[in-house]
Image (cartoon, rainbow, N blue to C red):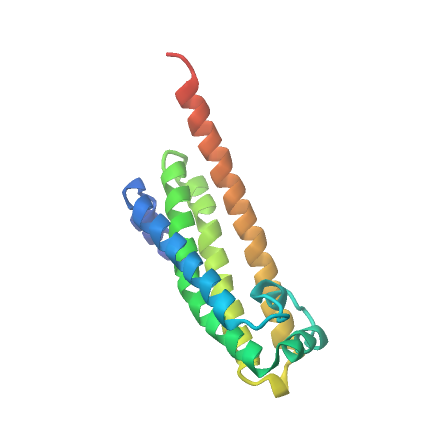
Length: 181
């Protein structure tokens, strides 16, 4: 089932004609996230990434305790915007990577293409778990916070791997175009 979804997305996203659209959507959602963060998150309140990587109930509780009710509300708003950002970065990175690896052997191309898709899926899981905890900060759960942080860590590793693969294939494409005929 997952393979069929990856193949469908590869056929739908792995085309360079949509790069401008997915890139624009990515930039606009990143801008929305950054500007909203600057308007709603109180001074002295940690950003969303440290909260994602809290790992322990004590650390998570300490962070949201320092933020207060206004900071918790700000994080809830940012997590909801992050759902849009997930669609944006998954679409853009998948689109760019898919266009770059289209000519590779199909299995290898699908494996590389799946990196941002899996990162996006983990991000959805992480956001859902974070919203659960932020919505009820008086009843924090160690396992939920740990699961959210593990999902975030793996997501970041997959995104780093995705960017590394994109840079590699972009450099390979540029070097092929520079060689004299």
